[in-house]
Image (cartoon, rainbow, N blue to C red; front, side, top):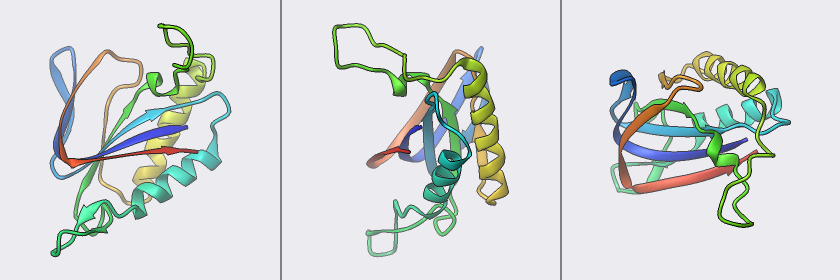
Length: 145
């Protein structure tokens, strides 16, 4: 599992020109799911999302987590994160999970984030989405589990 986390001042995701999710202050989580991902990776991700201190405190230091900052999460599936880009000029996706496995992991991740009490908006799995965001900082982190 690969997650690209971006601190944002606002973000939205649209499908067929209709906004299906939007947040203000918070984080966009672009999620790539690999073949062997399961419950253990989901738990690690949710723990990281809940506790990672990427929001500024009153002194401008990154000392606050998502809940302390009263932020929101926008979770978007993005299979291209698991691409092999080492050879040639075309990405390979052999590390990626099947669409069925990916959707099940994505749905379970949504449930786990909600169960952790984190405010969540989502994209639509498998859809052609347009994601708009204002990266605050810019602040971007990549996590691999």
